[in-house]
Image 1: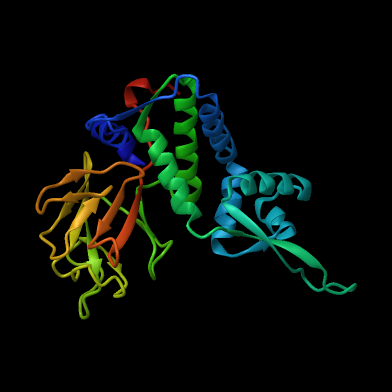
Image 2: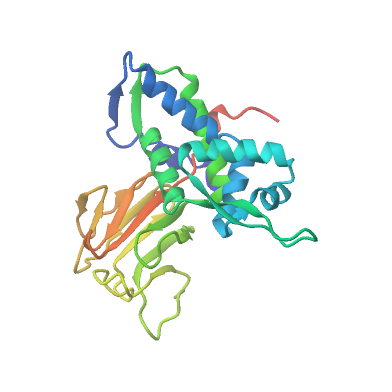
Length: 281
């Protein structure tokens, strides 16, 4: 992705332009082990491919093993690791009909909200400066974020809708300006080269897109600006002033309108390598 070589992106996405919180874990070995175990489960590209398959529809073990082109036994092991995080669930179902009849099988599916939870958790880990951890943990976190972005999100910044009628929908963020709001009858979704993320009418607090409610701008940095909406916007629980662009980073929660009936969006922004540390070849 061509933005990987933009220095401003790394500064914004890694939180270097904004005060960072610090967690001093000291002797909290349990916390270190839990973070490490979480990253271990998501570090496998095979397991991420399983999540991508289950995002489309529930599947049994045999169908999953065919989809990821690995053995039945290995597939079972990968599924057990995903189950250990509560990302997926299994329920009794019926397999395909054979000459011997129909037999019960375990059917696996994504737990509702699990994709958003992964994005939020990885973003939270990235945006907190944790002292007392081994240096390799930060590198592992970066690799997991790259894998999740590549396998599940197409390798580009996206917003994921959490809650409401559009729950789970993923919208990519393109270069330039992306407007956010509700549908305005009679207007095309894209106007004058400006992309629009149109949310369902059920989000009653969100001003019509013709205003628009707000906009995300992707350039050297990624920012959000409330466009003077009636019901306002908030970022991680803090009110966003109108006409005042604020930087965005992975894991941020952007709410358009009020918490009760507004639209809750989670930012997923892939980490980009520092070009100064790029190895030749």
